[in-house]
Length: 167
Image 1 (tube, rainbow, N blue to C red):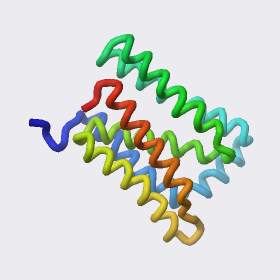
Image 2 (cartoon, rainbow, N blue to C red):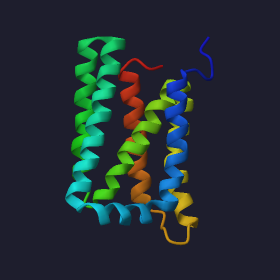
Image 3 (cartoon, rainbow, N blue to C red):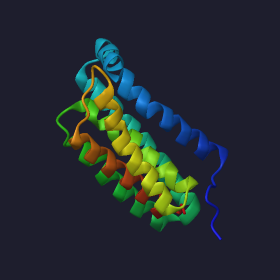
Image 4 (tube, one colour):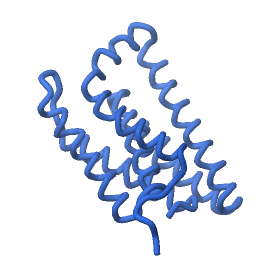
């Protein structure tokens, strides 16, 4: 019988960090973005996000290699490159790319902690609730397009966790 909740401290810590980061970035993302753009150009910000994506991709690949071996790690890398590196590059607004890091990670760690259907429900609920949260904030606007981006990233992260040997 599969326990309803599992995972180690690191997985719980990462999941809780993302659970706090997602609504926090929704609430204070605009001032944070302005501060970052005061320190660097949009091009450097885009490169920083690509670097973060590459680091996450490398960590997932090493994780999958240790759990499943070379073949599965290569398959996972291909999936991650397309969904979390190439697809975000098609987004016209650079800061939208952070959706893939946040919600991809949220979906990934949800699968490590909960049974698959519960994890998908949690990840997709988070994708929708984040935009609902933005809808009630005075200086933000919830957007159906962002719900879709969040959901794609969350499901992509969940698939990545399953491919890599998660529940």
